[in-house]
Image (cartoon, rainbow over all chains, first blue to last red; front, side, top):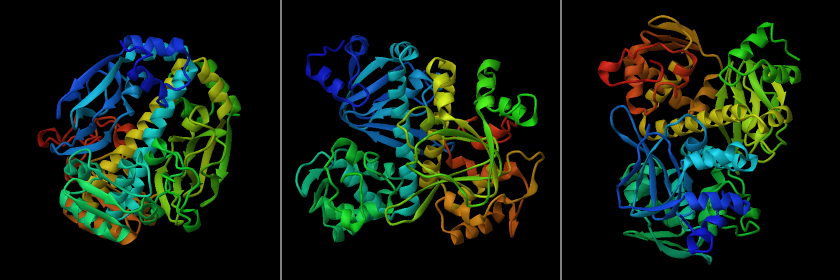
Length: 261
Length: 261
């Protein structure tokens, strides 16, 4: 059980999925919630498992993936603090999860029984609309990945990922550490690790330098100008913008409107 | 208005979205429905338009796309007879469409006011679940495209499209005509037209020959064995299988379970 007064409760109330919900609804979710820790590579659930819960990432990184017939792994998404998963399967869409999910790094997760969400959603259109919006954003995310693979170069796609990973940073530019293995970042972008490394090197012309896990972006705006012209994302559709709204686009004069700006 | 006794009414009742719905619900939709014809390249709606309707494709082909900042077009989906679109935007998810939609070939479309669906959905969990399932399948479709781009070769992806386009054909193999421009097929797969042409040529080793718009597949099972090993689709997730269920997988001994089989 989570108290609405403590840090975790406050954090939950601030997430788009829960924000503005009446206390009565929030209380039901928080009372039914459990916090669980997972170590790196530990499975949370497997594709095809009965969809009993939905989840909020409290800290760490979570990997969603599937296996091909030949046994190769395809990384569908990497989720971090504030992301939710399992909400669609728990409420609708049959009774099994579509993806296998494991901790990509050690992770802390809030687990809420799907039955609680489902019961509440059945009589509450607002909650249904939140589940639907969440699913719609995920669909949009998969679509954008798709579009990126079709229209953007490998360095542009690597740069887009860097913009997403640094979207909570303040300032014109900055240095940050890769929060999970670079090989996972490569897999998430559907690239071989060596292609991803090469792409990072090629980003030098856009003001990006990397040394081991450390990434330095000279100027986020310059990187966005390099990456975002071949993307159709509108404000609010891009992860960067979802995490932080930087106001008026500084790239407007270049017709570049990265979701970040 | 569509009569439930005529061909169109019968066709609608057979679609997954409407199948098994009580007559009272079906009647409401059919009474509010209009049939509209669109000529090739005619717009049905634009990304960002107010989401007033949801649609069923009665015949022809419909293209969903978006424009990048630089003005390049990204083809998100090509839909055919029996597919629905606009259902999510019409019911939830804000009030605007996420994609621009136009007729890729001359097309006939059933148009149902979103307000009718929305009103009915508000008090009917079954209808909501259908909208949600439909959206979930679309998310899954975008995810699979994604995975294909990451893990499959261009010829494998072209072969996958051929399997989807021929999924209603009976027999071990067969000849069919490309139902829309090959350049659109290439764009839908995120390939340049010349890459797509080369991919079709390379499919010779999997028993595929093409001449102009005409495609001959010697043996669907052989083509599936060539394509589907690098895909994670399970039965029912793949368009081929959605249109036609061929029963027990003939590829089971090869560990290949294309959605088609």
